[in-house]
Amino acid sequence: MGVVVLDGSTVRDFVEDEEAFQKSADERFATLDLNGDGVLSRAELRKALETFRLMETHFGVDVVTPPEQIGALYDSIFEQFDCDGNGTVDRDEFRSELRKMMLAIADGLGSSPIQIAVDDGDGKSFLKEAADLEAAKIAAAISPP
Ligand SMILES: [Ca+2]
Ligand SMILES: [Ca+2]
Image 1 (cartoon, rainbow, N blue to C red):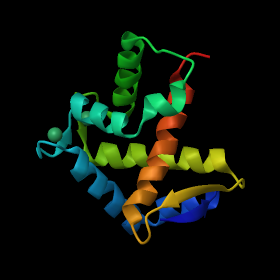
Image 2: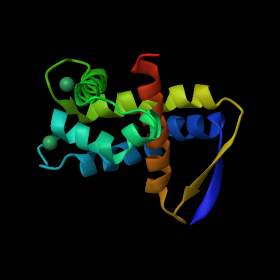
Image 3: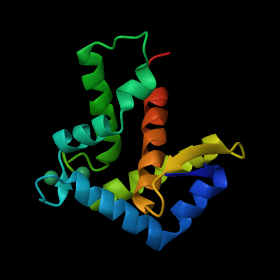
Image 4: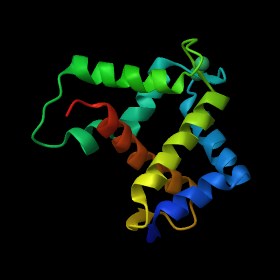
């Protein structure tokens, strides 16, 4: 394990490196597409969001979120990904939404660096950490004040 320091420009550079970003996004997509049909269903995306520990990171220790509220949260995230509203998230939708979220994170981070732990030489865990952040960010953006 090592630690990298990440700030807005690091994230932005990553997203703007078209080839690297696309590769990471595609790898993640393939991991999430459990039945291998080339699209993400609602259930597959939900599983992914659970993996991102969305609830733990955002809703914290002293708040118990009712299941129907969690369901609504997952639904609204799914709809954000499913741009054409056909009920599944394809590779392009996934990639472009991921890019938007990463850029939003980059804006949020600005020039205040944060430290994240990564497995040495494992590019995927960088994306995973970034994904944790973006999941928390979506939760913050769409949950009631
Ligand atoms: Ca699938
Ligand atoms: Ca779609």
